[in-house]
Amino acid sequence: MTSPESINPIIQHFIEDAGNMTQSFGFGRVVGQLFAYMYFSSIPRNLADMRDALGISKGCASTAVRQLEQWGAVKKVWVKGDRKDYYEACDWFGRILKNAIVDTFGKRMSSYTSLLDEIEDDLVTLEGHGDGDGAFIRQRIDNLKQFQQKTRGILENPIIREIIK
Amino acid sequence: MTSPESINPIIQHFIEDAGNMTQSFGFGRVVGQLFAYMYFSSIPRNLADMRDALGISKGCASTAVRQLEQWGAVKKVWVKGDRKDYYEACDWFGRILKNAIVDTFGKRMSSYTSLLDEIEDDLVTLEGHGDGDGAFIRQRIDNLKQFQQKTRGILENPIIREIIK
DNA sequence: TGTTACATTTAGTACATACTGAACGTACTG
DNA sequence: CAGTACGTTCAGTATGTACTAAATGTAACA
Image 1 (cartoon, chains in turn brown, blue, red, green):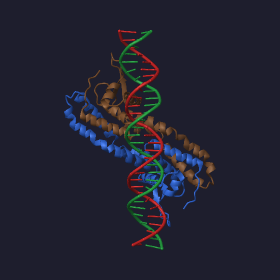
Image 2 (cartoon, rainbow over the protein chains, first blue to last red):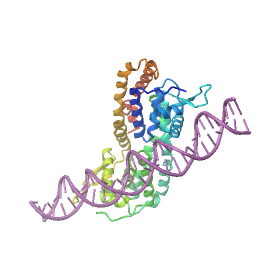
Image 3 (tube, rainbow over the protein chains, first blue to last red):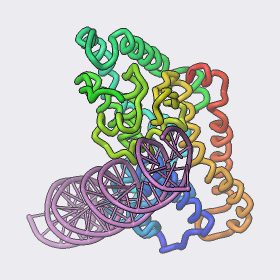
Image 4 (cartoon, rainbow over the protein chains, first blue to last red):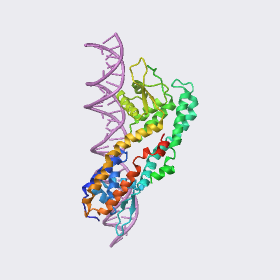
């Protein structure tokens, strides 16, 4: 059990900003706060530490820390003689960012990748329809597919992987 | 004035998906819906068209279409003999995506770029503090700054610009 | 210059969702 | 096998925000 220590105001400021950042990016505020808290902690932390440090509920800390763990942003460490789960931050930002992007964008985009094929199959029914001509729509869909192909696998691009490393 | 035409169900499906996509990415649903609507319309559209086609309020259409205009996703076109503002979609996705990313991420990140310098200046006050040692925190901040430098200007990277084009 | 026909703005509302707190499940300990 | 000490789950809530609708601003026409 760690003593109830107060967090340095500078790091506190950092925690707030990290929370605002993840908040504005659509993940909860707590995710960023927790990562910053652990990133600037030289010792592993458990759920009670997080709850006390951030003033959040234990359930919320549990959910957020598992999100971070899924992205490889934190990892569980074993503290012998203690039954609690302890976590510490990883500092391999490239991998964290990639995991988060793949996890978030990939899941969201996968629902839409098939749509272009569907709409292309049904394109024949658009011929002669009142709303726009079929040739116009075909061209638009071709542009879309072309762009989709260019962006597909962008994270696997070796140059991108070099930058996001 | 265009006749009150019904939208093809396939395109309607596309509009819905585009709305869900922009919604899940943190921009409103209407932004994606409006862009898809105009992207598959061979003629320019005005606010009343959008309101009728999507069943949204005129004010909402006004806000969303200006967002799209700011990203270069749509452009205003002049229809002579008509005082309304007409818009049509652009199909240069790379530019649109880049503008949206710069506009969104850039604005959000700019608040935090100075924080690392601030915290580094104040790092001396951390020496000997109870919560972690200064050397540890210095190393963490160095890692952060290194990663920040790598990602800074990533959109200006010529290889990225080639892909997002 | 008054009137009209638009776009824009904004106060209010409805909805989504992140968080709380308690109940639950589970695995060590004695 | 109790009893305890955790982590997890979930119904309820509170906060933020996208959208509505009405008021306001603005520019073209008479």
